[in-house]
Image (cartoon, rainbow, N blue to C red; front, side, top):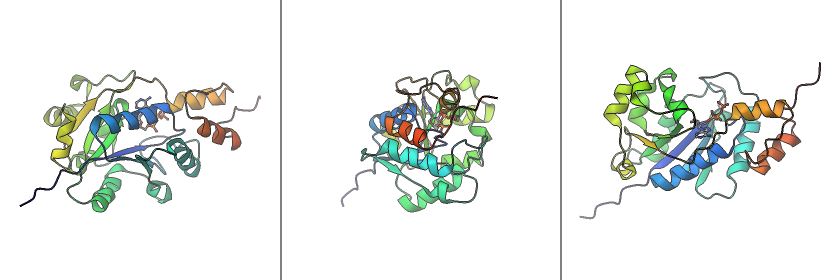
Length: 225
Ligand code: ATP
């Protein structure tokens, strides 16, 4: 009897990407390498459910991600949340990917530490563990320490924590793996603020994304009163 080789995990990177920046790209690249991912699926949120409305339209945010990941054969763009006319929630998105990928494929939801710290505010957050592993990347200013997590999340973290990326292949879902990436203290919020003040965001995000922002006057400086 031949045994099948374990399937390489699929990484999933959701976000508002308002706009996408080098912090997102390094997160995807380093996760891909360290966790042995088959690919990273980028899923821009159409109408993010857990935060204020984005400044750029869903279509522009999708286009910016497309420009940012162009040429990386390991990165895939998924426009389903942008096309949907309902708020974007991770649980139905992961259910869709589980159906698409089959029951055996490990799915790995990639989160920065700030997003993980807020997980208990997500719709049906405990269902996430039945659908995917969660890999939590370090992010400057957001220390990941079980003692700082809400009690319910701390319990899940302690029960599911895993330090060996090779274990992600051993089951399709349910582990929480913290991992370190190059600290890049870049945030979309600060990029929007800086653009609104007319400051240059160059070298904080890819040039084609910056060109798109200029061409469509996204995040433009507020007119003088
Ligand atoms: P905003 O400032 O508007 O909240 P953001 O820069 O945090 O945006 P999101 O689109 O909300 O970007 O982030 C998508 C995912 O990428 C989240 O899991 C977030 O934690 C992660 N992420 C964003 N920036 C970084 C960074 N510099 N380092 C590590 N992870 C990051």
